Length: 263
Image 1 (cartoon, helix red, strand yellow):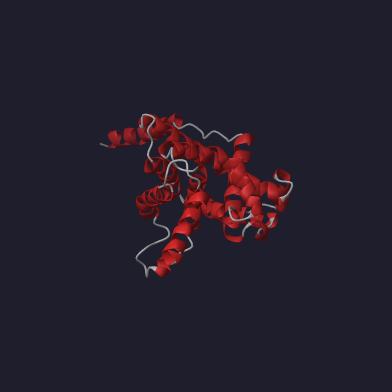
Image 2 (cartoon, one colour):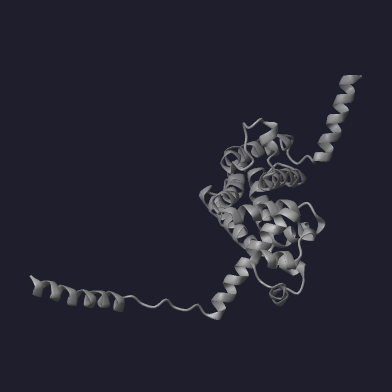
């Protein structure tokens, strides 16, 4: 027994040694990887702060403090605050634009060249709402930031730069779905759609208070269930008229009819 115990004691370290030899040392990250990781931390921090305080309520020092680095590092990467702001907007703009563009292309192919208004809107809106609801807190911060800056002249310029192609792709599908609708009505319809989307992404909590808790501004699933259907009905309503008639002409005839009825 004693011999067996001694042999066991001797063999145990060997087994442990063999396990240690199998384990491989962790690869050290390259400087490029470290730089990329630090850049993501900076952009995440800036995105969060800008979404709350806006472009003019945040300094490079504020961002550096949140990341836990000296502000000179921020100055090394970004010469001024606007360049940092632009980088924050651009980082996720490419993701959301490309996903929606693909969804619109796939939908048109699946529709056999006969898109519907609601189908086109769902490809555009539902894809975006899924991204913001499932992408984590950083994506929600980006949505709130987009809602905020879209209502400013400088922010509108960034929207033009990053989102015009995918918006015009949607407009193209809506024109195919509503061939007799006046073009200005389709653009006005999109104007109302994007206003509702931006308010949703802002997540202000106002609907929570108005509804007494029946609705929740964080409930993107509830919005997704309703928004495209609601907006499609709006498009159909404003486009319901004689083919080729302009909205201005229709408004004028409507006013004349009202005057005649009053008389």
